[in-house]
Structures are given as C-alpha cells and as structure tokens.
Image 1: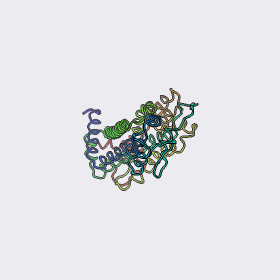
Image 2 (image 1 turned 120 degrees about the horizontal axis):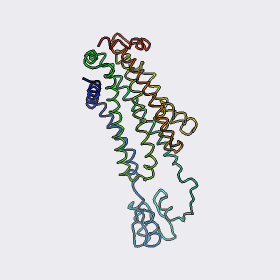
Image 3 (image 1 turned 45 degrees about the vertical axis):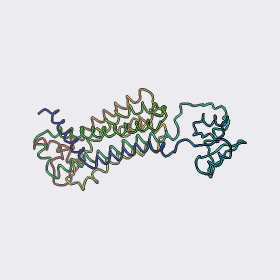
Image 4 (image 1 turned 180 degrees about the vertical axis):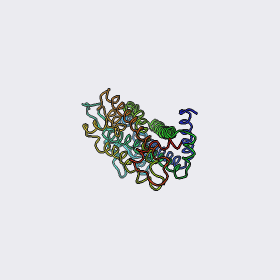
Length: 358
C-alpha cells in the first residue's frame, strides 16, 4: 500500500464516521436554517409594499410607480372606510391628505413627495450595515469552523488513543499517513459544509430578490476567502491533531487545547472590533493566524491592492507547511504514549517512537 492510498483510506474513514455523527448532521442543519433565515425571512416578515386606497388620478399613478399596492376606489368616503375596516394600510383623499389608523405610512408619504435631485459623491462606498456584517460573517465562519472541526479532530485522535485502536491503525498505515488522512478528511468536511451553506444562502438571497450589486461586491472577496480558508484550516488542523495526541483521555482535551482556542479566537475578535482601523487590518491581513479573515475583508472594502492577496497567501502557505511539520513531529512523538498527558518537549524529543514501534 502506497502512502497516497493510506492517506485516502484514512480520509475516507474520517468522512464516513463524521457523516454518520448526529452532532455533525444537526449542526449542519442549524447552520443551513440560519442561512435561510438571514436571507429569506427579512423579506417575508417585511409584509410587502403598503396597500393604499385612492381615487383614480395623478396620485394613483404616483403610488403605482412607487411600487405600492394601489386599490382604486370610487370616492374618498369609500377609501376612508377601507382604512377603518383594516382592508388597506392607508388612503389618499382630497387635499391631498393621507389617512391611516395608528401609524404614519411613510411609504405613501414618500411616494407623494417631490424629491430633490441627489448627487452621490462616493457612489462606490460600501453601505455601513453591509460594511459591518460582511467582515463579521467572514470572521464568524472561519472561527466557528476552525474551532468546531479542530476540536473534532483532536477528540477523534484522543478517542483512538483511549480505546487503544490507534495501536491497530499504526500497524496498518504509517503514522504520518494517519495524520495526513485526518487533516484531509477534516478539511474536506469543513469545506463541504461551508460550500453547502454558501449555496443555500445564495439561493435564499435570490429568492428574496437581494440587490445584484451586493453579490458583485462579495464576488472577489468570497473567491479569495476559499483558498485562504483551505490553507488556513490545514495549518490549524495539524496542530489540533497534535493536541489530541498529547492527551490520553477526552476529559483532558479542554486544558490541552486552550492555546489553540486562543489562536482561533483572537483573530475573530480582532477583525470584528478593529475592522475600521486600516493600519491594524493591513497588519492582520499578513499574519498567518488572521490573514484568512482579514485579507478577504480588505478586498471587500477595496482597501487591498491587487498584488496583496497573492503575497499574503504565499506567506500563509509557507507557514502552513512549517506548522504541519511541527504538528506531525508532536503527533508522532506522543501518539502511542497512553499513560497520561505527554509534554510538548517530550513529544518533540520522542518523535521517532511511533516509527520504531511500527
């Protein structure tokens, strides 16, 4: 059996096990529901355009052109009666006057008002609400995915140590192939979940008639987020597997994984709270732990030059290679030690233990 075949078998096993895991299935369902709710429900709960009763004339034409639900009536008395009966939201009668029950119908008032000419000095500026939500979405997706799947990788490694299954596995495949299979399997699952959520969110936005310019702004940022996510997740996944190999009981994972949790959390909070600081965001977009979030955000806001994502991705890839090497060394040196928690220094020194046993 070649190393490639061993990696493929281990990765396939990880994927099959996880696809049968109810926690993974239900978490995916919850994320999908959130995606649907965020894109479809606002339009549904908005109730559509206001309905207004009006006598046929210029006012009716203006209201129709504004996209309101216009109900033509014979006279003002009938229009007022429809408002009192709750059949329409408002009515326009002679004067002109706008009638409503208990809330001023701003849509109707705006449709009848004379709008002054408007000149946009910065037409390409990002909407403030969108400018906050998009960075938060990028940060949240990378944070929750890295944390969730990273912990699952660590728990899988620890479970195999605790049940002594790992001794059978290393007798069949090389230790590094076992690690590579786990990393590949976790990456495929994480990327697949995100791709499914993105697809559902896109379909939901289409159903809800989201403005086309929103998707055009997101295009380059999402396109770069995908390779940054994959490389960044591989970098972290190898370390999560090493964390799982350092302990022999599931109860000890929490303490051993605290440094990794901080590595994942800090970039999330940094991008969310410091996204308005261009200098800090530039620095974060080149730091490997935060570049998978910060660089796509800077591309979305238009603050990054065309060459910057290439350089940032190269730095991230080089760091990922070095991190995978470190993770593999710790993984090899601690995987077969089942008598309590293994220290980092001890695992680093005894990296050849698994090979000798194998």
